[in-house]
Structures are given as C-alpha cells and as structure tokens.
Image (cartoon, rainbow over all chains, first blue to last red; front, side, top):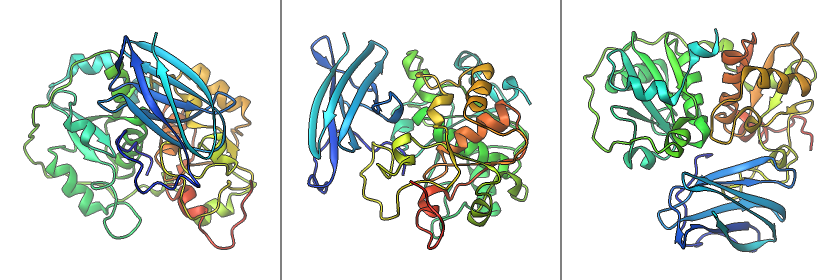
Length: 97
Length: 275
C-alpha cells in the first residue's frame, strides 16, 4: 500500500541482499526531529516518496542503486543531503541548520 | 466548478471547525496519525478497512458505504471536508469515492495534514462522537471510474496519464520508495501513457499549485483537450489526486480514475507493456 509505514524499528524480514535501503534520522540543534517530513528525490530532482519521521527522528526508504537526494521539511526549517545508494543498507543523517 | 467549490484553505478550515452542517473527515491508511491528534471534531476513515471490500479487490458496495457514513454521523446534506496525510493522496481518493456514490457537497482541505502540521496548528486527541444518521447513497457513477478493459482499449486513443514517479514509470522500482520493492508483477507502464507525476501538481507543503501553473503543466506534457482521459498509479490513490486536479480544478470533461492501476495492469496476462 502507499501509506507510509511506521518509521524506525528493526530490519528483520528485509532482504538486504536485494533491497536498497536508505535510512537515517533528521537532526536539529543537537536533537532528533520527530514528525519531520522527509522526501526522497531522484537524480532529476523528481519526487519519489515521502515519510514522516518517528518519535526518534528516523526515516527509511526502499529505493534502487543510484543517486538520490533527501530533503527534510519541518516547522524548525529544512535540510538536504545528496547520496549514492548501493544494494544493502545505506545510512545517513539529514541536518536542519 | 471552480477551485473555491472544491477546496478550502487551512485558514478557512480552522475558522469553521465545529460549524453545524460541516463534517471534517481525516482519511489515512494508517489511522495512528489520527489517533495521535486530529482536527477538533474530525471523524476518521481508514482507507483500507473502511473503503475496501474485505474479501474482493473492490470498493465497499453501496449498502456498506451507506452504513459507514451513517455510523460516522455524516448526513446527505452535510458538507464533507476531507484531509489526510501523504499530501492528501488518500483524502483525494476518498473525495473521488464520495463523488462516485453521489455525495453532493464535498471539499478537500488544501495541503492536508502536512500543511496543518507545518503551520503548527492545533490538534486534538479528544474522542469524536457524532449521532448516527440514515445516509442514502446513489448508485456508483461509473463515468469517473475506469476498468482494465477500457484502459487496454484506450492505448493510443485516449490521454493515458501515469502519475507515478519516473522510476516507477520506467520500471526501475515497482512501488513508491517508502515501501519494500518486492511485488511480483512486471514493471513498466501502459503503452502510450504520458508520465506526469502527481507531485508536479503539488507544492512542497502539500497544497495544489495554482490553476495557471496546473494548466501549463498538462499543456506542456502533451495533454490533448479533444480526448477523454484515464489516470492511473499503483493502487489508485495518487491518480485520484490527479483526477481531482484535472476534473475538479481544471474542469476537464470525461476524466476517469483507473483504481485497479499498475497492481492490476502489471499482473494481467497478455497485455502490452512498455518500459
């Protein structure tokens, strides 16, 4: 289904030999940001997916190998990070300045 | 039909909370969002549990829709204001669904839950009880719902609009990227479909772009005014968003949503697929 599942939690049941998982957390002022909107943009800057961070500030996407951009939008501000993902687990952090 | 008939702003919504004759309805797939805080007085609809048949892959039938709205305290004369998460995907789906069963007055709250939250507007955890009604639905209006045979027959003749992301359109990924990529059906798109992602019609805060921007968007992407239109995505909710834009905001005639969408089409034996 297209509704965002709960963010955070373990990776049990996820096959990291086939899935390209991009996950991490959103930080601001030294603390994780809960309830931030995080969107995944493809190499052409087009929207691919969006989730809301968990109480611990976590997000997770199931993408494909390649170039991606994460953009976070929250009442405290916005942040961006570009990354290259490979099959398996790709962990990162998005900082809101 | 104009924007003011079908959309309300978050300012308007906040000013009109609790007004008699107005029912705010939050539509999500995961109702934990509603349970964690909702617009004061809003009732909830669960996209899957309330709006999908529990056995077959289809809508709930007319009697079940009547029972659902009656139990939520929604009357035939009420104005329903829908909002939800995911940039209003599911609220737009519910809008289309309410129209399908003939509800007169229904509107979307522009920007949905996201805009409301980003603005820091108040949310309530108080339980909402509305007295039950005797809702009467109409027969489904199939002029706004497309089925698979019509989609196959429309290849090369109607505006087929695939509103998924470019990577789903090309078959690189099979589902939106917040979901595991493990679906069994084929990747790709219906031949001759244009890829006009739903997201191009929305601003980052989840509100719809202006009528001028929207008209320009579809014009530039090759939308043919002289042809009927079918929009699809993966399961029919993002294409409801585009259906809303084309029919309700831009006033195009003969626009259908194909809710079977790629999950159905990409699993059919023998139909053509492009990648």
